[in-house]
Length: 593
Image (cartoon, rainbow, N blue to C red; front, top):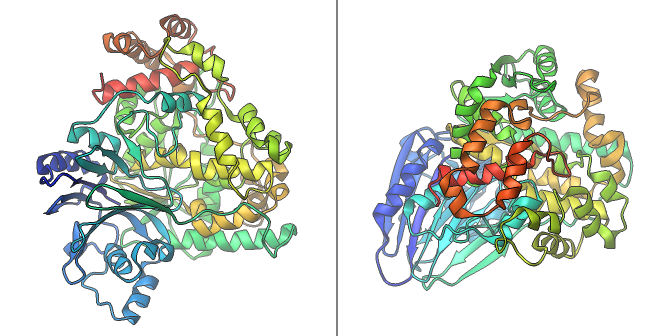
């Protein structure tokens, strides 16, 4: 829901309104329903609006409450806005709109930066205190909504996407060597605060940043589950099944709060199917559901329609199915790359981008199953990590999850491009050394859910859906559900091939065929196996003059990849050529030389 931008000056000058306008223009796809701007003193704000709650102009942004002396730009949704509003009305606040943005403004006036503790939802915001000149930035607990910043001694700029910041100008676009190391270690993931560009950073999830008029700031991390066994549920599978079922019901119900229709991205896997079943439990009929498939390639099936059709029939949804021919992939690839705030390796970004284009013709809000595998330990690399002793968790994580070793990574790069230390392993060790996380699996899940996931599947879904003015909501990342899962005994997650507690729920409400099927992914065989139209585009990018001038990758290594495009694989099976090419494609798409 929306895109925001802004500039804060620290040197006594006025903000560059033209730069804020340019940033706001780039955000139009995120908010095609309205545009606004505000400036006072050292601060300027821009906003693009996607109308989801309070469709009237009373919900327009930037939103100013002159009596309270506050102005805000807000992206996302506060699912419990009605409940918070009633509490605020009870202590004397009066409202001029039905918007959740105004609830946020009044909540900040009442509770200050601790207002985020009272909010259930996904959000990023920038708020200005008129009387102090202080600017407050923040993100939701799981980092579902993005917020990028670039800063020097004279000013700070912020925006919902990195390309928007580029449009403002003046950004250091040199590559960050540590971020490049992370990108090549973790399947394209660069966790906050870094990005692949040295001059752009991200506000971390669950963080409120308070910026003083002189440019100094303080970050406040307001939420982090302990990943220890503190629940009264013990180790009883039946008790955990009921507790998780109840929490998931609540999570899905919360995400139906909207003044527009809400649909579901239905892959036919366990996670999205559970969402559809729980909506049916709530009595919702003819829920719009959407599935997409691609032509087979190299013997790999490109669709999972058998399962999505089964779920759609079982719960009588209003089902929409899209089959995409392979010859559409090259053009779709360009659009998906352009929509990325940062380069993303997972090939299903292309699928999400194409699916979102179709879905946005019917609805503005969809629920999806993202996050369940990280929260409930559904991936195949979790069991070997779980077998390690707690003190060996970093090494076990590196063995099971990293795409390649530090030495192998260094051999891919042009001499002098990389980092002498294994900065990715350093990051994991530091993260896992924090208090809490009782077992090696707990440490791995905490790492994935709170450090890596916001910058891989979560960012991918946000970028690809919002490129078409479509808001995606993720019930499995409800913070109370995540807290519950963090306390769940590891064996209740790992059993039955992973996500056991979810499968136990599924056996009660889903067709058995859906619960017991082999784990699937959003398949795009034409990208995974470098089909010729995609390979031609990749070859052009990697041999282009700007790629050679940039000199990131060793040219002999690039030649080997291009000679055998489907042979070279990362440890987890990802195509190495695609990982290398995506970075170059993204840099070229955004005019970075």
